[in-house]
Amino acid sequence: MNRHGELLAGIELGGTKCIAVLARGETILARQAWPTGAPVETLAAVLGTLEGWRAQQGFVAIGIAAFGPLGLAPGMAGYGHVLETTKSGWSGFDLLGAVQARFDLSTALDTDVAGAALAEQRWGGSVGCRVHAYVTIGTGVGGGIIVDGRPVHGFLHPEIGHMRVPRRAGDAFPGICRFHGDCIEGLVSGPALEARTGMAGAAIPADHPIWADVAQELGDFFANMLTSFAPERIALGGGVLQQRPYLLPAIRAVVKARIGGYLPGKAIAPEARIAMAALGADAGPLGAIALAALALG
Image (cartoon, rainbow, N blue to C red):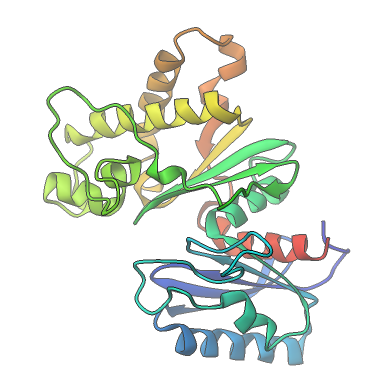
């Protein structure tokens, strides 16, 4: 946890929107948002706002929660950089270096989903969990995994949105992921749902048959997560499920069926393990603040 009462700054860099926040603990005192454009112009606006906040009120650390993929392994070529991405102009951009060049402060960089997972542990529904995850289902599908209060990294951060899941017999939709076709992102992200139905996600009616497929696919996805690293909680964010929390019972039923009695029912308890993020839409901005707190050690 950060030292008592100190102000922290955060940058949540999303694919379409960038948000700067100033907070004390989980209380956001100021925020400002911009469309995510080219790197230099976007960072100029964000860092200019942070400089104004620092001059007026001061803050002691900065957290950057960004879309990926990111170079997060110290010593790797491209450490602190945005790696190869479909977001125009951002591939290879030294994001951490750009911020550190303007501020001589403790700074932490991680994925937006890892930040949100940290925030859920500090202030949300994952308080007290040693191993937990945050999954967002929106424009894409991504997940952050936390073990003992720190995001999991290996040669890269987790990219669980590209996990493959079984398909319903007869479903010929090829998926929209340009790398893997019908990975979970290619099946249930907002753009995938639009491609599958011909309707914008928000316009798909609750009784459309696509939701049975989505419940099955997400149920398999979460069952794979539960049996691969046994998270105590999976917190869910992103527009697809935030707009349709009524899908959760069907998803949990699939999870229970897929586990197939292998683990004790009380240990799996999908109704407790899989839940909407308690911080709602603030999980992302507070994720950047949680990373700033982590930067202080």
